[in-house]
Image 1: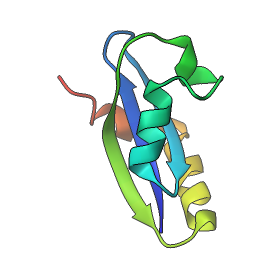
Image 2: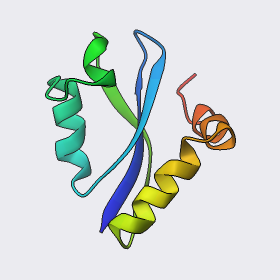
Image 3: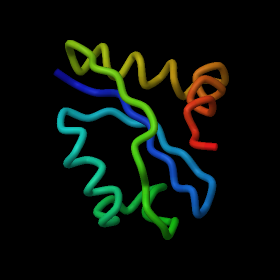
Image 4: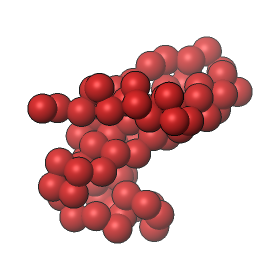
Length: 82
């Protein structure tokens, strides 16, 4: 089982979309700045705002690509806490 997820950083008003096999571990790694990419650039806590399960990694990658499209990003924005 794989997960497509979106996390949000309220301090910087940024969100990130990704996919993983272990959702809780991935969230922990984002908050520990273990990745040197996009999420490591911002201070503050990343919180999970959206996730969905996929049967295979291929399905997860396909769904991640959909969520990173314009319409997908608009959908994710509806999950950002008020």
